[in-house]
Image 1 (cartoon, rainbow, N blue to C red):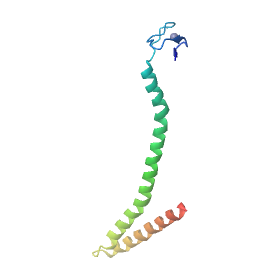
Image 2 (image 1 turned 120 degrees about the horizontal axis):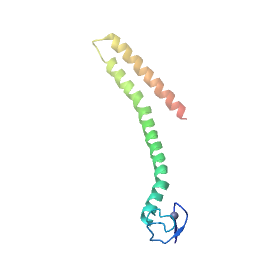
Image 3 (image 1 turned 90 degrees about the vertical axis):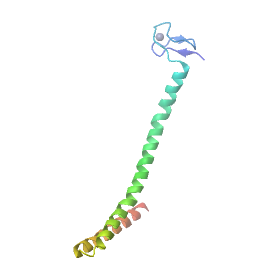
Image 4 (image 1 turned 180 degrees about the horizontal axis):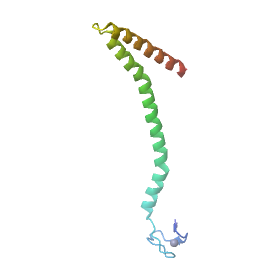
Length: 108
Ligand SMILES: [Zn+2]
């Protein structure tokens, strides 16, 4: 399989390191293939990974944030030394539960 100069398009020998026509340095087969593989695989894999991470984070936060709200609400609701904290704790639990319920309904 013959190569071509990336600079001027001159046909070259497989083992040519420099173009005999314009003198440009020619990447070896190995380097050329590595570059080609990186160009082909890198953007696709990165995009796929990014979406996967975003999806996982989305699920984690969608599930965790109402749970964190409920945990904080339970913490406040069980503060026997402060009726005000208990009242707001219950509100926080109800609010987090409603938000959780709405997000579950929107998935359907
Ligand atoms: Zn050339």
